[in-house]
Amino acid sequence: MAKKFYSERNLKFLLYEAFDVNALTQYNYYEAHNRKSFDLVLKSAGKIARDLLWPIFEQMDREPPELRDGTIKVHADVRKILREFGGGGWISTIVPYDLDGEQLPLMIANACQFIFMAANYSAAAYPGLSDGAARLIESFGSKALYDRYVPKLREGIWQGTMALTEPEAGSSLSDITTTASPTGDGHYQIRGQKIFISAGDSDAVDNVVHLLLGKIDGAPAGVKGISLFVVPKKRVENDGTLTFNDVNTSGVYHKLGYRGCPIAQLSFGDNDACRGYLVGEPHHGLRYMFQMMNEARIGVGLGATAMATAAYYASLAYAKERKQGRKTGQKDPALPQVAIIEHADVKRMLFFQRAIVEGALALAMQCSKYVDMEKALNGHADTEPYGLLLDLLTPVLKTYPSEMGILSISQGLQCFGGSGFCDDYPLEQYYRDCRIHPIHEGTTAIHGMDLLGRKVVMNNGRAIRLYFDEVEKTITAARGYSNLIPYADPLKDAMSRLSGLTDHLHKVRLEKGDETYLADATLYLEYFGIICIAWQWLVQGVALQSALNDKCSAKDERFYNGKMTTLQFYYAYELPKINGLEIRLRQNDGLTVEASAALFDD
Image (cartoon, rainbow, N blue to C red; front, side, top):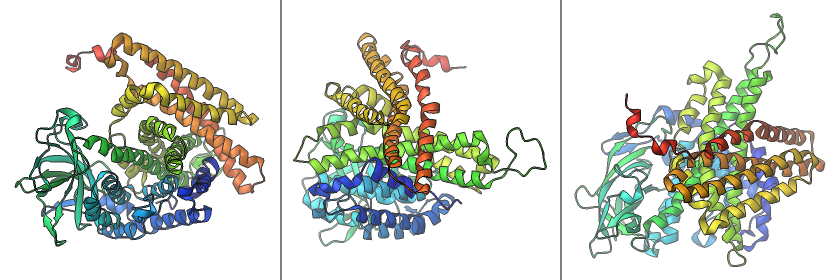
């Protein structure tokens, strides 16, 4: 296995040069931090990743969880990992000080999470899920629920999950059938089934705490009737002892990849003895759960980026070491073979990978900064623009690295040739592992419909107008450097085309209705994403040109030149792909809408 799975230099470039995380420390909320403390956190994250997560990356895949005697048995080191993360504060990085958290900026927290996921995505999922569940209770639950469940989730002693999906409902949450019957004793009686629950059961913890969606008896139909409950595998009695809560693990799924973290099928209330505890108000559950879902969507995009990054560095190491063939035009067999990185097409594949992963990571930092600015300015300025920008870009951050990460890793496999198809190298595992990301937390189609059907029109289009303003600021800054003008101008043209295409599709909606309007929403999301990453590369271009204008070391200059060439590659090879997508998106012939299902019959 390659020894390098992420670039500390690139991560610090994004944090300190492109997005200036240190500027956050001027605000009261983050004033206790500084560059030195940030660096220390990043260094500690790297050490944990290398010492604790990376060594068992392959083993967790090859020895997947098993259901035995009603409990899912996971890798023995998961218990140690959760305790280490809990004891070190890694499950409470962004939690405020008054709740015993670290109150770090999300940019730093996500940088650490990126490191962990690049080292071992399956292992990093366990503490990440507990963090999300704990924050949901912190945000909407009672003090009694907080006191009973959150500390042990934060300490890594208990595992948190989100239990949404059901056998007959899937992504259509309005159709869930899990019921909650009032008892008058401070709890509800829960009955139902949930499937595809990540870390839904595990012998690595003493208890599993499910944040579960269900419907109280007599609730309104559809999503308006959904409530949120805390449903532990073992409930806590008044004396502090744990009692089985009639939560049964009925199966564990055998998966293509992402094997180190179990995906469970759960049955609640088989013996009418499952107690659930209402979070917040009745019938507001979906709104509450969206906090955890949106955080998870950002996490999925970050995870896809991390996994593809690790695959890129494995590909790069192999390309530098593997000797095969000679330079084009050199016919003399007596000449020594060259490393395959000397071949133009291999360089193309490596640039493709780098362009995808570093562009996607920049978008993750951009979105994280919006969250940080909301917190920093809360009560002192209008923070709504940051929230709107985050809402607009969340489906892009979730899907672009998820879909493009697969293609990126595929190019990495191609660099390895036949060796990449074998388990002697990690690329085949990355390729299997990454396929979950376009499915996790909503399929790509769902996010396409979310972007086109909701986000670009919300608040009468204010979010997308704010986005255009953000990109225009970057274009203006880029024009201050002569060698960025050839990229600022194509981005401005692409944004103008995006505006025109969006207006065109709105007219289609009025003329032909929602079904035709949304039929190719996935393609619109792809179109939007390609342009969005072009923006992120120009953001990086401005930062690196600014650095090159100052005195820098030869090593730094080489790094900046590599970044600049990757920017050029993205604009030359990736941005032009919007041309073909736009042709299709302007057709609006309703081909897939009008086609009968019978046409697929032989």
